Length: 288
Image 1 (tube, rainbow, N blue to C red):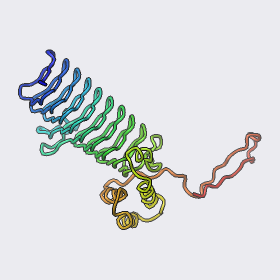
Image 2 (image 1 turned 120 degrees about the vertical axis):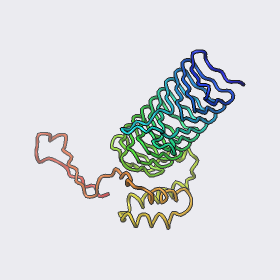
Image 3 (image 1 turned 90 degrees about the vertical axis):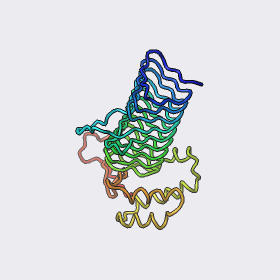
Image 4 (image 1 turned 180 degrees about the horizontal axis):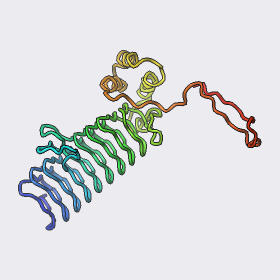
């Protein structure tokens, strides 16, 4: 099928459009853009210069792709935005160009960006990820394949979120999130493996068991960082668990810690029938 452009849309003659492209009312497509076969732009979507869309992307109302980087030093010649195929980009999503003309903000394939998601300059997003409403990535953030970023999550610049990780709603990510783990939204700490996500992705019981073993080395062994890396390198050199060493050995910001009650903590529990007593209490010691 041919290209279908609504009469109210503004499409620059130097934009490259594939076949079976649909551009809705009041859209703007600037020069130096590429829109692949089967893409669909709903009303008021904006594709700015320096943006490449692969095939079969669906861009919803008000999304702005390829905006200038939000930076105090606005570059004269910014980089590009390169988006793969099969992505769903919902209402008012913003994806910004890289700072340097030799670089690009990269989005993979088959991702879902829900309403108001922000992807800043120089980010790298893999394949099959999900970003819920109002999630925000600062500049130079990397997100691995099949990661799930919940609503209103804010990710600090230069942080990484590993493959198959799940970040809970409203979490504040200021260090790297290892692959396969779950981050609690309230505390912003790791609370175990993303077992539901792993099962849905088809991981075997044996693979998940091995991931648990590697997780315990990282968070429960009490080893030094150097020894943790050595254990991961030697004991989990193959299979899905090998990704732990690859990820942790290349961190520059450190990793998010686990949310656990420290060993030896004493909790004081007052008896309900002695609320007025200063001395009536039970002591429960947490041992690990």
